[in-house]
Length: 146
Image (tube, rainbow, N blue to C red; front, side, top):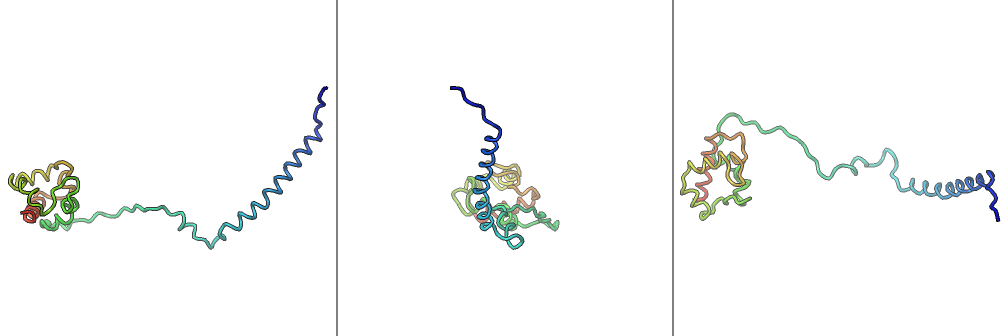
């Protein structure tokens, strides 16, 4: 049996039927979506799409040009690692950890700070520190650890 070719009118009926079916299904769905969205102008969309964290640049504190004492340098730079023993740094006040270092002399300790040692970067990470400030900080830290 030979098939008869489709007439253009039967194809048109199928296209119209599909279009009507789509309209019947999509119109109620689009109305449902409008009920879920907040009203324009009165929502807090800007707050909802803020990032989880914020990064802000601030101006670095500028020194007044006066040398800082050892306690100040320790509090601003050294304490971050030495108070808790971060990355193998000897803890402030740990006499056992500091005794061999103190025995080498203050000059060796200052040299270690200036050049960096182990995980400690040069100048302990305080790039703006002068050699006199480093000496004062070493003296302060040694005093706390004797």
